[in-house]
Amino acid sequence: QVQLVESGGGSVQAGGSLTLSCVVSRYIYERSCVGWFRRAPGKEHEGVASVYTAGGSAYYADSMKGRFTISQDNAKNTLYLQMNSLKPEDTAMYYCAAAPGGSCSMNRYNYDYWGQGTQVTVSS
Image 1 (cartoon, one colour):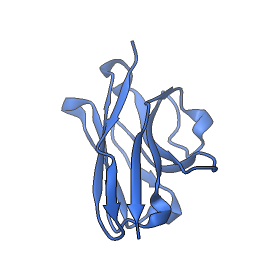
Image 2 (cartoon, rainbow, N blue to C red; image 1 turned 180 degrees about the horizontal axis):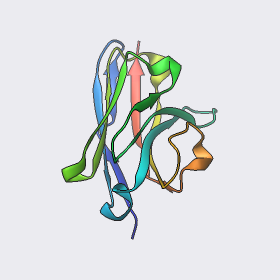
Image 3 (cartoon, rainbow, N blue to C red; image 1 turned 90 degrees about the vertical axis):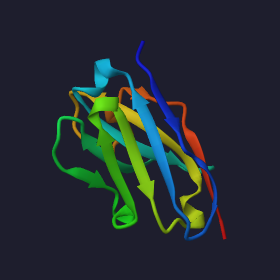
Image 4 (tube, one colour; image 1 turned 180 degrees about the vertical axis):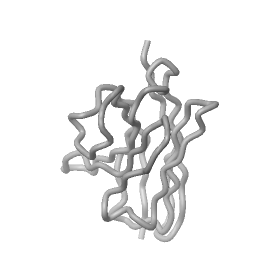
């Protein structure tokens, strides 16, 4: 059974930091692009960052560059998202997703497997 399980969300004040984690089933982790998306209330899913588990460059949405960092621990088949200088507009449900054999685009429809999400709330 394919699983993606996120953790690490919470409530922080503006300017604070959080690190999200996502454990991905080994079966798909080793051959996928894995990424983070978010969805704020009343808005569509927005791509945050993605990376190939086999190595290579990471990709970021322009508004996240310099504040968010995606990383991975292949031994633990775990994906991370370090979020710094958080703003109230970063408040959203954050999802981990995997695209086995797919490209690392920011298009949500490219991803076949999704976690349940972890809530991030940033107060001003």
